[in-house]
Image (cartoon, rainbow, N blue to C red; front, side, top):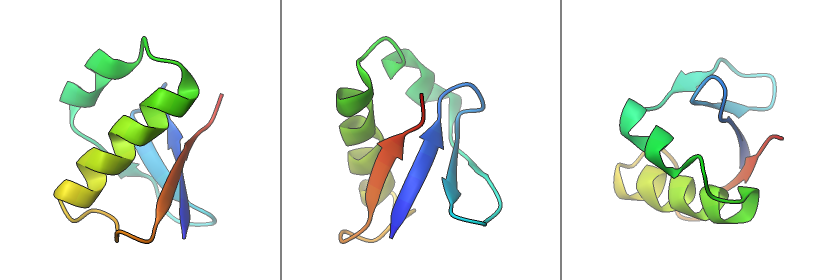
Length: 61
């Protein structure tokens, strides 16, 4: 599954699903480019079992 991350709302979306708010601590990475930010969010989400290892995260511009 691919989750979309919206930096403005600091939330992840699964297509057609409800937003899942993420901790504010992730906002410290918003200065990164979208590719690097997506990697950071994916690593955090997998470590906290928010997503499965096979899932991916993309950052919505």
